[in-house]
Image (cartoon, rainbow, N blue to C red; front, side, top):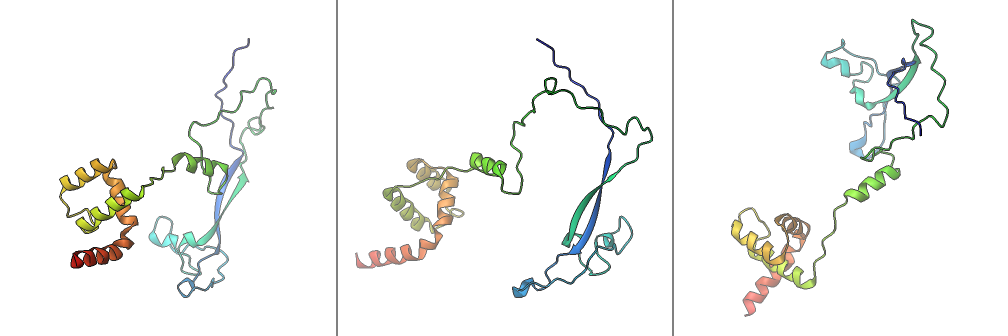
Length: 194
């Protein structure tokens, strides 16, 4: 059995990233529901480095964030020609297997990493029976569809009876608030006929 050798040397950087800001992509007619760009082809800094005007384009007067960002890697010349050449890769048997991170990295491309992360962190949906919905509806009408000015003990007792948390009650009230006008009218008709 051979021991694993860990090499902690860093290779010299052979490229240097350079950021350039190109075409302006600001939609000047967004409020009208149309698309209209001004045609500015490159970000030209308005003020000196470090000033607030440095983030404004002199050509189109837009913020730098509206301009398309392009990153290019330029080669870096090394003072020592020996360091400029990367060493030959180790044989496949000597290389350690790639280490997977314990926390999944997510990308914004909607790839499998993003889907897997969303599936792990998705909240479980709470489903109420019709009887529970009726209890929640009656309680909501009784407290006026808001928990803010309701006595704390009343809410705690109801949540304990239902077996839910205060947050679940609050979310249910928020999600079903559109029903308050129909239930108030029904409750008023029921009270008037009795």
